[in-house]
Image 1 (cartoon, rainbow, N blue to C red):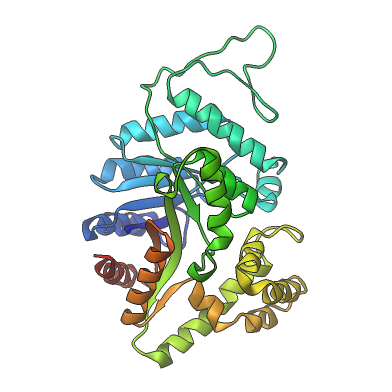
Image 2: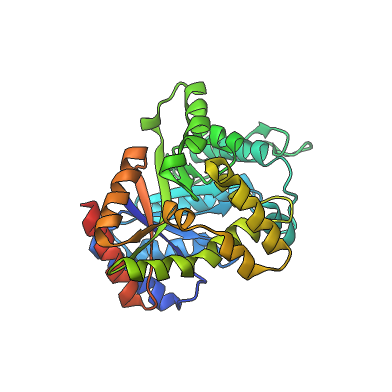
Length: 343
């Protein structure tokens, strides 16, 4: 099982500290570093800088939001980053959600499935060195008139494309067209909620699971004993309540849907109702210990070791680790311990 992490260039830490974390993570043996975008800094800028400072680490956009740039602009960034990193770049894309797309970017969150499919098709066309010509429902290149199809002057490259998806239809699309899947809110015991549509998409394209890099993420933290673990679980309930009740819009929350499909529909609905009603503490109190432990890698060292085995057996190829810690040294220590358990 490969190891990965995700950073944010505009997170709570300074960029200097974030850079130190990435450089040390590479020395510790980490395989992949994904750079998030969300509603903070853009990913390509940070990835370009990291490409010049790292030697071995694979670097990925985790994620660029489909619709915030034209497909050809994404292809240009991908080819540039692949050249700058000497072929170490992975292109992570995702449809995001209505709040970020419409509330921040002013881009309609309409037909995300079609937009993602068509965007990937155009990106692959451009990266292959072909003249870009596409007539779809969300993408039209070139526009009608005097324009003629063009090709990029960059050297063609086969850059792996990962999709960050959660809904059944988007998961099926991932299985059909992507090289990897960037998942979240993953419970190994409920993994059929993800793998059934993924496998259906793979089968439709004549592919098998081995053709798809399953990359799942979770916080990793180590507790000295059961007493410390109980406190850690309580601390994390409000964050999970935010995912279930506050992410997305009032009517669209893909995280809530994901937990619901994995066996917690009643609790997820109640948490959302409390959170939307302004009762944040009440929402957090409804989150169960099992929900926290099911989607994280926290516990004693032996618990985390066992849990990593469960993730591997469930079909995870690359585990994306979010190491806990209040300081750079603490996060790196946590990451190092987790990497030791993977070896």
